[in-house]
Length: 420
Ligand SMILES: Nc1nc2c(c(=O)[nH]1)N[C@H]1C(S)=C(S)[C@@H](COP(=O)(O)OP(=O)(O)OC[C@H]3O[C@@H](n4cnc5c(N)ncnc54)[C@H](O)[C@@H]3O)O[C@H]1N2
Ligand code: MOO
Ligand SMILES: [Mg+2]
Image (cartoon, rainbow, N blue to C red; front, top):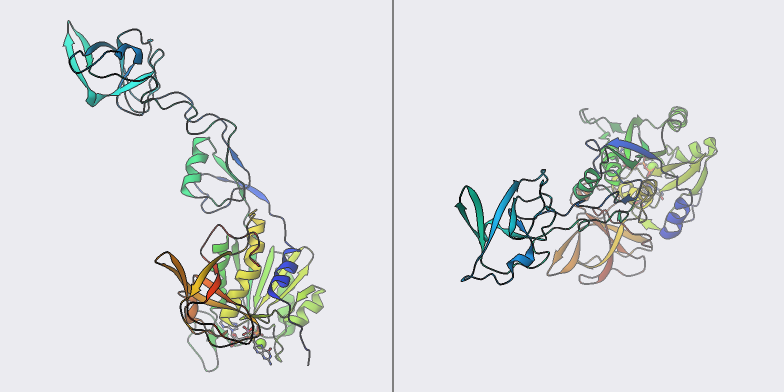
């Protein structure tokens, strides 16, 4: 019987990260990309706005002409032209002249301020329109200046940042019809186990439905990768070996679940040996997921996650997610770590570090983490409301409600450079 030597979690993650693959760039039409990450820095290619403009519907004037204006002594301006946004005045504003201007329209030459429509009185005389201004208007008042939003050459968004609606607005502003994004790594997904049924199959004695593949496919998408379902492999060495070696040609990374422990039908260790893959570790000092095995081969990584649902969920987030994020050029590829308070007693001691699936929430400004269900490796139900892992370092004692703990956030996009 093989005795496996557990590796500390941080050491295990470190070993995997040494084999991180480089990401590549592709260009996607702006209306098609969503949630990808930028593969280039976004730099302002011109000033925004690229002309001085009015932020109000009003009248563009020369501020100095309002000196002395008051309620009792209004100053009169002749309205020489009217422009809406998109139009440009044809005449220069001279002394005591005004251009009726709408929000977003370019400031006419000569004018240095705008007074809002509501603040003037309009009068008509001899077929001409005049306005009366009853207050002093300062130089530059109500002008939105060229470059006030962004200056040409300014670095606006770093590569490796996930697209969001705001970044989309920037891309459109600068005329990106095609957006440089990090190509999503393609991650193959095999579920192994003779006991596994497809989702549409009726239950049979001793058999269960394959839930891992669906869970992991969405974890892959949440991390920014592209899952490729490769189906279920019954526990047969030959068949599994050939399916896995074929699949490796098609994907960047390969995940299998199940068959990594020491059971009679746990064939993954044999398969790695036959492939000639370098096993980075086959036991991690963590719960769940202690059997997590990672192997490297020809610039690809094979993640042998546990068959137990909670264990494969945790294994993915700790070991696969950072590799995906790295390929997406993120400078912070790991889960974000924050401090919080344990919301319930957790008395079961364990020599290995526990990653307790938890629901984290703010209460009176304090982050609380409460276990989201039974803390066993073969449990599925606790995953549904988990948005975090509370980290309970291994040792001989349990933890109490109110203890301060590190918490890894699952639904955050900022990440950590290195949380360990
Ligand atoms: N003698 C020992 N037995 C076990 C050890 C050990 O150290 N010594 N480790 C235990 C731990 S810890 C874990 S975790 C599991 C890991 O087992 P495997 O990764 O080899 O996975 P399987 O044996 O194939 O399956 C385990 C469990 O998970 C269910 N499963 C598998 N695939 C799926 C799927 N796609 N969807 C849902 N559920 C799945 C499977 O039916 C089993 O119940 O080993 C312990 N044993
Ligand atoms: O790998 Mo197992 O999940 O430690 O329980
Ligand atoms: Mg097993």
